[in-house]
Structure formats: structure tokens, C-alpha cells
Length: 124
Figure (cartoon, rainbow, N blue to C red):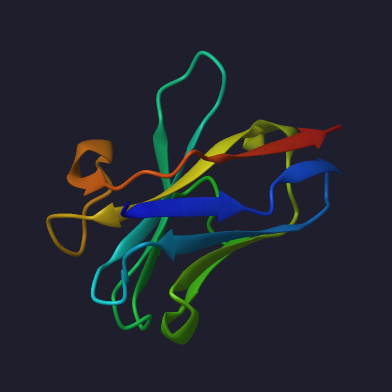
């Protein structure tokens, strides 16, 4: 089954760091742009960051710019999200997904092959 699997979530205090991983299970996603999204309780899923298939272009939501870094290791079929200077408002379930329409989109419905997500909790 073609699926993405997220890992690396946990509970940290404000100012701390976490590194999320997204691995492709059953399929190689090397030739696709990828994205990270998050969904907090009672809120809609929102765009966090994206990376193109080569890893040379990235895009970030304003809320995380300068604190989060997206990267990929094509040999390992894995995309990462390094999160630094975490804030309580970063608390959410984080998902990775494949961009199905091409570079430049941050719309949830332009992405697919969603994983189950990984919980990130930041306490003040």
C-alpha cells in the first residue's frame, strides 16, 4: 500500500526543538514535490512548508518562517521538518503529503497520500 508515515512528534517546552520525519512506505516519492501540514484541535488543516522534488526550492508559512526547515533525503525516501524555537501555538498533529498538481501550491486539496500524522505538543 502506498502510504506516507510520519514520526518524531512528542511533547516539548516552549523554545525547544523537534525533528519530524516522513517516510514513503510502499512507494518512492522521489519525483514529487512534498509538503508538511498541521491541524490543531478545532481548526482546519493548514500549510506549514513545502519542498520541490530536487530539494533546492522551499516554501514556508509565515507563522513558521525562520524557525522551521524542510529538507529531504531522496536516497532514504524521507522528508524532514526541523522545528526550532517551538511555541505553544505550534501544538497540532503534523502531516506530510505529496503535491499532486505541481510546485507552488499550499492548498490542502492539492495534496494526497496523507499519512496518519504525528502529534506535537508544546507547553508554555
